[in-house]
Length: 110
Length: 117
Image (cartoon, chains in turn red, green):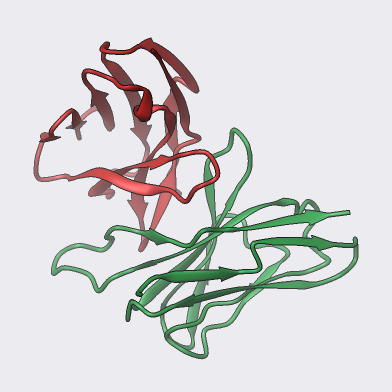
């Protein structure tokens, strides 16, 4: 089955710096790669996603890149702000469901 | 106000007891999912259902059961066979698929936290 590895598990950056979170997946049939943000005590919410027919997608300060050959994709957050502090999960589709990575706790220091 | 409603929000259970977590959605979504969240392990898929009266096992289905008698409802039963049931349980749904796409955005409920005493 699909296996999604996510690194790092924790990440601390200074406000204004960039943050990068990386994921790898195993199933070459996967074609949908979303990223979710979960704030403390709240439900996960989609922040950006990418499909396999594109290599990069950007939405304001966040961007996702996909390398299908290497089976890895990354989340990039620029000009980080304290409100970006949360746990971030990557995911990849398998059959008709999503398999999630183990999460990255991002702490943005003011 | 459309959305996914999970209940109860907090639940305590004694060992050996079955417990059922409710998940209701009024988004007219076809597919529904149950995930389990443990610290440091992300979200793991328990069961999912694409249509009424049909469901499939996920990666950690042992000790759990589900039903899908109505489009709006997808309850999860945590049975006494589940060895370590203490966790945060999240229900989710997705809208109808685009042509050529098997998966879309997951809309999550607020979760149910189960503690076994």
